[in-house]
Image (cartoon, rainbow, N blue to C red; front, side, top):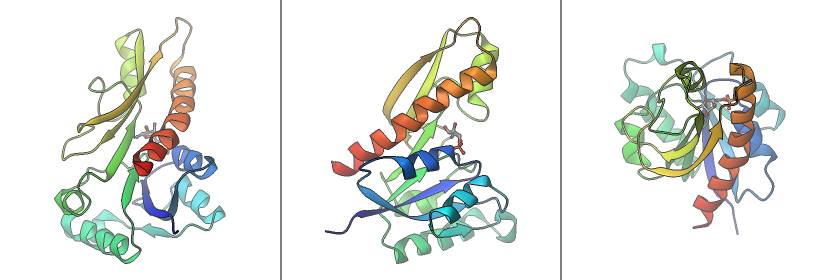
Length: 187
Ligand code: GRF
């Protein structure tokens, strides 16, 4: 029986991508990494693990529709069924949303709907709230909106700095994302 094929989309360091690669019994094969930044650290991680990459520069295309059509074509050719966003810093447009309806999932470092958008950890830290968290959700056309699949609360401790908070949030992310991916794919 062949494994379900998935793609990961990322723009940055790729610690969540690494957590997926390291996870035991992930019932899928990561066959493609899609990345919009030529210098992203996540590309080295893909290389080390022999995972094919599709790297693009949005500025070389006339529209989101143009680059997403090319991505969709790559995904189709490879028989990819799911897309997992892991620090992909672009909104997904109608082209991919329609091609992969109900099959695009994101992880966000806050307890949504609180603190959507960039630097969610910094936003929570600055706001002085007692608790933030991690959310895994299906995506829609909005920024960190879309039906929530799973959330974990993370307390902000009195002696936390943004860095210590970030470390604890990332540890939760690295455990939660593989677990949710496993559950989604096995359904
Ligand atoms: C993570 O905090 C994720 O929740 C957010 O972007 C960050 C990506 O980090 N969407 P990494 O590149 O996986 O280390």
